[in-house]
Image 1 (cartoon, helix red, strand yellow):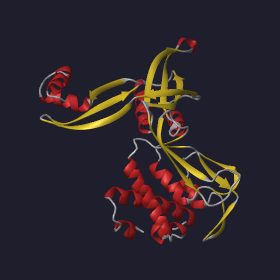
Image 2 (cartoon, helix red, strand yellow; image 1 turned 135 degrees about the horizontal axis):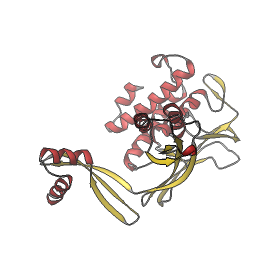
Image 3 (cartoon, helix red, strand yellow; image 1 turned 30 degrees about the vertical axis):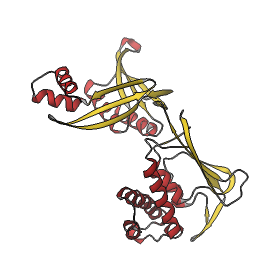
Image 4 (spheres, helix red, strand yellow; image 1 turned 120 degrees about the horizontal axis):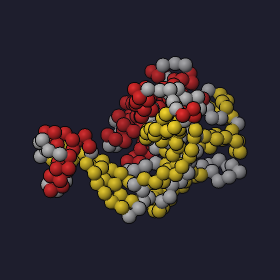
Length: 307
């Protein structure tokens, strides 16, 4: 498979994306068969039309170059499917492994609605699973299946633009009155490492007139369960509260700049009628130290130079 894909007349990015998709399938098949990856033999997903399908998707994704890919939860279908290994339950074992960590549901339609190839493409390209974000749709595409089901057998893709992004975030919080500042600091570090968007503390008065700390963690649905485990592991709390909220964010882009004072990163933000830029603190602080000036002076020097 690697030999075939590496010799296709496509860009390096398309080749790498296609190889990564097949690596995901190989790892899932390896788990399903209990054999190392080099001993895995592809059947349906190894045919030339499957390679063409995967490569074509990778080519189209390169051409579209979306900032973010959002997909709905995956309907896997129900019942059984006949494949090279005989009759298998839906989803097939490799598909089930590939969809771990991805929201799925079944039932309603007797048949296989998500194959290993489709699951691998979703796992590789999709940034977030959930509802369609608010956006101005500019193009719509349909892929039609050959089987007849009770509902339309089609896959729909929409391409659009947003003014910033609206997403659902979760706030996990707990109160503690028996942790030192050092232990709370360590817990915050581990929570950030586990994928928290934000972690902060608030001093509070607790029962029996004890001074305590309110620990608050902001996260997405994808990292919520992992962060709950980390909160129980690294704090003394015996209960965690959860609140769901909408979070509106501006579109953000990190721009790499080559300046007379070295490499510099600038964060450009826009959306909702707002546009602003800010230099990355670490780069700005380095320039200020090297030139023995304040942060504000370093920022003004860069602006004066057109950055």
